[in-house]
Each structure stands twice: as structure tokens, then as C-alpha cells.
Length: 401
Image 1 (cartoon, rainbow, N blue to C red):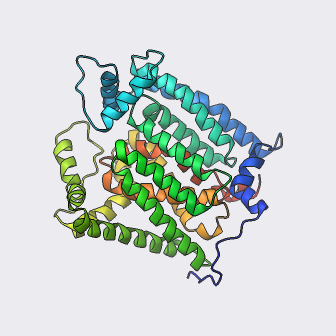
Image 2 (cartoon, rainbow, N blue to C red):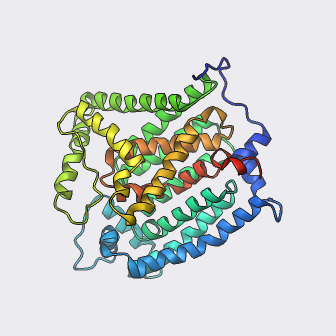
Image 3 (cartoon, one colour):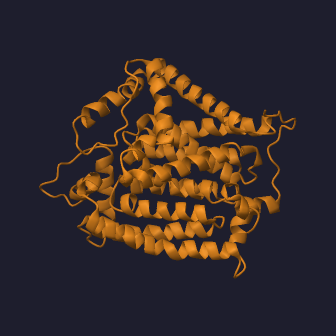
């Protein structure tokens, strides 16, 4: 049973523990790993494999994957090139097409050209981030390289998800700044997400609010509880879900138009997805009915379905890699939540708050498992911090650096 912490302060940070966490001291020390050490070898292997993984991913894009995976990308490309056959969509599609048209200094006119150029550029951004993180064990290495592959297939190309990646990279730069206190950094990250909501994806204003709310809740648990377990994780999740309910209940009076939009969201998805041959991974609500209680019941059920997508694995071997990827994310996330009072690195704690806020909003807005996996991979600047740290290493490799 969880014990109550008598001290009102959070975990104390020592240089040694910060280095183990992969925090500022740890990321600095990571650059000087001794030659021949296990951790140096694992990091070098990760970095050496990143470009070959990118190459294989681009081959899949060029020769193997069907067009249905890139409908949005091709639409944005045709809009950016102002082709006469283009069916222009407004909103985030217009923002993305105008942005890519403005930066197209090399005259790129095919999706493959964009995919290769963006892949090379942003894979080196990934490599830079990995060199600043904690050295991986074998499981972490596999996860990181799998994410590099996903990013180079679905994100590092002309499309909206690359813009999302850029905003999360900006959040990464904020929370890894050597100066600044945690509350200030979390508010800056919320401001970044709010800015994104004003011109690109409107629902990011909800993510911004949830990031701050998660920071408050997790900070309270860090200060109050001396020992955490799965029961405490369940308590945290329950409080966060209750916060979602309260936020929606208040919005029904304060922002009725926005509230009705959220309540009708799944119905709108049903109209688009029903009978669509390309919507095999659509997340259909299982509980019929209307109103906030039914919505929240579906929210909780969909959250469990998205975090452990068993139904995706049952669709066949093609979907097993996505099932494994999402299951690993969920295991890493739960493991950190039950260790929040042991996290001495403020960067890791802030990254956890940002990611949890993101997934809480995603349970509302993600229409299908494919979009969920793709958008989650685009959070890599934050996600890799949750994975590459000593808390996530296998027991046999946890102690060394």
C-alpha cells in the first residue's frame, strides 16, 4: 500500500542520480562514454543503424506501400503545387500546403522527393537527440529504431504530421534548456501548443490545458506519496479521467458550441468511415447512446483499446508490429508513472507530463489506430525522453553507464 511522504518537497537531485536518469548531467556525460564500454557500443550501434533504417523505410515508401497510406500527403502536395486537378481542402490542409510551398526552394514536385529530403534532414535531427539521451539497452534500441522507421514512412515527408513533429521538437528544446524552473517550462510548452491550436490543429488548446493539469496532479503525487505502485497509477489515471469529465461538464455551460462539437465528433467519424474500404482500423465507439455519461464511458473504453490494441493484433500479422509498438509505449508509460517519486531529472518529469497530456486528448480525437500510431510517433522528441533513461532499462543493464 502506498505510504504518505512527510516531506513537502520533491525528490532530491544529486549529480550522480541526474546522470543515471539521463538528465542534464547524464546527457552531458553521455557524450564522453569510454571506448569499449557496453553503453558506448549500444549508443554507437543505434546511431549507426539509424540511416540504414531510414533507407529501408524509404524503399518501402517508394516501392511497396499502397497509395492509401498517403492520401493526405498527396493531397497536400497537389495543393502546394497548385495543380489544376487538386481538390483543395481548407483548415490544416491549407496551412500545410502553403508552408511546404513556401519552403520548396529546390522545386520538389513528387512525394518521394519530399520524403527523401525530409527523411535525410530529420533523421539527422533524431541522431542529434539520441546522442544527448541515455544509452539504450537492447529493448530500447529496438524501440528507437522502430520509431525511426515509422517516422521515415509516415512523418518525414510532405504532410501535416511533420508540422506536429516540429512543434514537439520546440517543446523538447524548451524542457531541455539548462536554465528555467519546471513551472515556467511547462507553461512555455503549453504556450507552444496553444500557438499551434490557433492556426493548425484547434484541439491542441485542449492538450495545452491538459499538460498543465497533468503537471499539477503528478507534482502533488510526487510530494504526497513515499511509495508508488500500480494502485497509485490507477488512482492517478482515475483523477485524470475525472478531470476530463469535469472539463467537459464545465464547457457545456461555458463553451456550448465547442462542447457540442466534441460530443458529435464520433458521429462525424462514423459518417466518414462507414463503408470505407480504407477504414479497417477505425476506432468505433462500443457503447451506444448520447450525452456526457455515455461519452465518458466510451472515452475510458477507447483509452484502454488504444493503449493495448489487442483488436489490432487480431486483424492479422501485418498489424502485429503496430501492436507491439503501442504495447511498448504503454509499458514504458506505466512504468514511469509508478516511479514518479524516484525521477530526479526534471527534464524527464516534464516530458512525462507533456506526453500524458497529449494522450489524454488523443483518446478523444483520434479516429483510427493508424492515425493514432502515426501521430504518437510524431511526438518522438518527447517520447524518446520517456524511453531512454535508467528507469526503463532491463534490470541486468540498469546500473551501468
